[in-house]
Image (cartoon, rainbow, N blue to C red; front, top):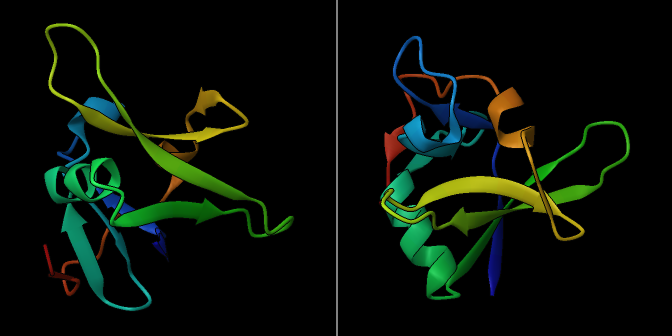
Length: 100
């Protein structure tokens, strides 16, 4: 299975929750995926997405959260625990092209 590093996210201005993330991407490589495409890729085990800590090089993988009555959304997790690492990433730059 492929694993892609995520370095940026997109969400509407003023939104602060994981449920509002619309895209994940890599500003350095100039690409991004819609959140729905990433969810499908994770759930079909096509691709893993991860965030890498700059200092420790520890990887935090993205997972899909399913809450009753809500659409599925992306969130980072490590050692079986959900965390807010994904929300700490900078915004995707406009020049990043959507590839899925």
